[in-house]
Length: 122
Image (cartoon, rainbow, N blue to C red; front, side, top):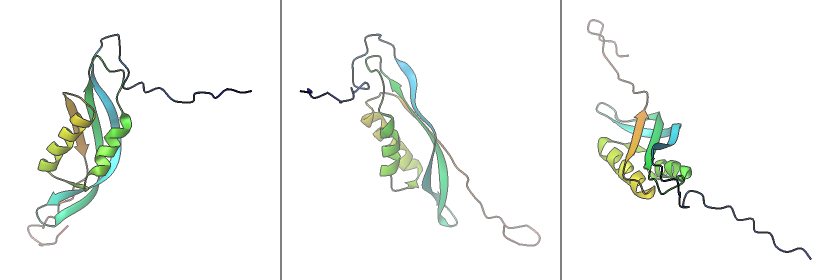
């Protein structure tokens, strides 16, 4: 008879690392995600942001859960502000059990301007 085969994948991220090497930045880079940004004239501006998200990996961990970075972005209401950005960072540090982290967000932001002479808006 065939005996059952254990197909469980080991949880490498949560296993103890005996090498005692901390890593400054582990995470995801260039993840595009839809966001809403506060706009003084229009109220809200919809755009696509490019995110880089990293945490410090303590010496006793072998890795981090990369999918949690995307989960954190998906949990947001899509509206990003100075206040919510700090909350996103705190959530990331807590969820990934890290003391230090880094989030960078870049996005196109459009401003409507009026020509001084013709008064045409563009």
